[in-house]
Length: 311
Length: 280
Image (cartoon, rainbow over all chains, first blue to last red; front, side):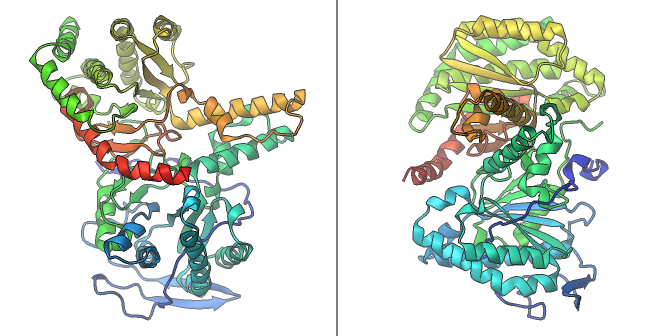
């Protein structure tokens, strides 16, 4: 039996009742400025999406043609929301006796490829765990490098996001970010907010527990102010207060973690309740189309019961 | 039913004596060279399929859940012998109430029958038993039996077996949020913490969790080959080593547990490095 028999429960989709001002964190490191007209890497063995872009009133719209999926994948069974823990950049660099920064640069290429594939294969939301709140304890040199790389990448890719119909959202604790980066993030989020082809959510300085705690604090404030009563607090209210209220599909259907570690490491804690988990030994910079197809294929063969039972 | 009880005690007997116990002690001796997990949690999946295997084409019987109970007892005993102080088992999710009412009733009846047996096992091994979850939906007989079992074993402190019933992690977090909000509101009204510290902190939530009785699990084992948490220990599983195995829960054996622990030991250095980075 295929999981399609069971519709995604309505609890998995969320129509935000309020939008919080987003001052999130941007991860993107070292995006290359290759436009849609550039030659694809050789490992792409499917038809490229032909896109035409119109810019009207400052908004970009992309008309997409249907893309042929790799053999074995079904468009109807494609997950709406894929989350990724992009682990292994440092190890990849060490294996090649390269500096860690080279690993992060290589990781960005993998991310770029995944974003393109998601957009072409009908995945609506891609959430990437770029920088955990616990990563702040890394060497200052590395952290500063990452932040500057984020800022440069964001500036260089802003126009590309518009052309590609990608909406950028950033979640996480922004209090430690430089003001210039925060400002740029706000600008990118505002500029791309009407794009609909793919929503790329970047989790930076993010912690699943922190997300729940900030939701809890918001709820407590509303109780204190008399907006709601204690008995009004339910799972729906918590969902609305989590940082993933920036998307219609806040709960990942599939989580991929690279580099062989078998844990979720404080990523999207509440949101991962029913998420299918896929772990791979590949280091993130080596994670390519074939690996993504393998993950999606595994997902499409699974039966999702949400605690119930197939008859 | 008597046949299943005898079969279960036979399995327990095989665990506790004979050549197998000598071999097991040798294996555990090897395992103890590496780090032993302090807390192992089990998602006991596969009872229904086991039941169908045993009764092909027949109606649903309690065999799946009864065999599941004895598998849990065996695992608890292995963990106890190895020195694993905390064991947690996901026995019944709030989501399971969505199943057919007759399936739910079969499970409830099976659990109720096992309280006396579980009490005997717990007292024999001096294991404290704790039920985590919202027992409200259960009938009075169930709640009373659960409370009695917890009281009978409350004095044991060496090992803890937590059984999650009518539990989901989101419900647990919701409960913790409600309690924390209520406490902060009370503090605000009473003007306690006059420095204005009404902000809810991590510790406020954690002390109100159903699972506050135990540390975070080192390993979460799920049987039947599924690879998801299914709303189990979401808060506590941040650093847990996740282990999915294809065996059906009633058929889980010692070697499954040993492999899971070996795998955990293989990945432990990475986790230790991360912990050290935090301390720097």
